[in-house]
Image 1 (cartoon, rainbow, N blue to C red):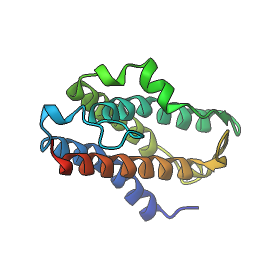
Image 2 (cartoon, helix red, strand yellow):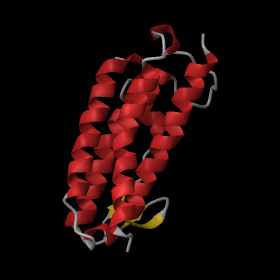
Image 3 (cartoon, rainbow, N blue to C red):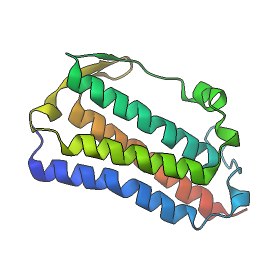
Length: 158
């Protein structure tokens, strides 16, 4: 079981991401939102649509882990979602707001958990067995991946 202090720091890390992304995007000019320095990765605009969408996925998964016995969690084709959901046309500020709102809901759910609830499990179609602690850690890693991407894209300048 993850100690209480470690759970506290995990939640603090999750709470930091919207703050850091908002700060980073203040450094980005709107003309940078659609640059694609790496053809295999999202633009800044698409990253924000992706992050905002995934808050709902993370929340849905956490709720299922809490209310079902060892639920099966499906994987998603992120590239297909980007096209289907129109990430390339989304308003960046609106997606930042959606991301912040979604993260606040996820944190509120995590704040209510008992120590035992953090150890509840699910089976993911790609990763196998995962606990709620593992899911929260995955969210934090996903945050870090995209936060670094945002910083790198902004540093490239147009």
